[in-house]
Length: 95
Image (cartoon, rainbow, N blue to C red; front, side, top):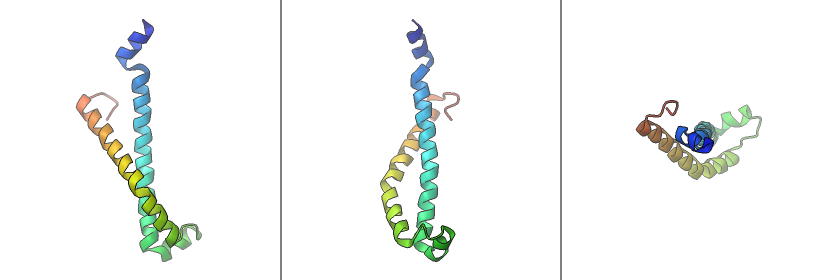
């Protein structure tokens, strides 16, 4: 009975969905920042390389920037999915 009551309220399923949504949103923000920084590392490498202490070279920036393309697209699609789902259901706390 207790499990059925939890399911009607959302219970663990909505908690897992909320955690996934928050994780995706955080990862989108981090991926966007990294994508922008690596893009600047490609075009403005004379500025970015000294700012990062030589850690982010033009070559490394290019490799990271290229490697981030597909994960960024997937994260962005998931981000949009969660946003549209929240808007469609009108669930409080989902927006």
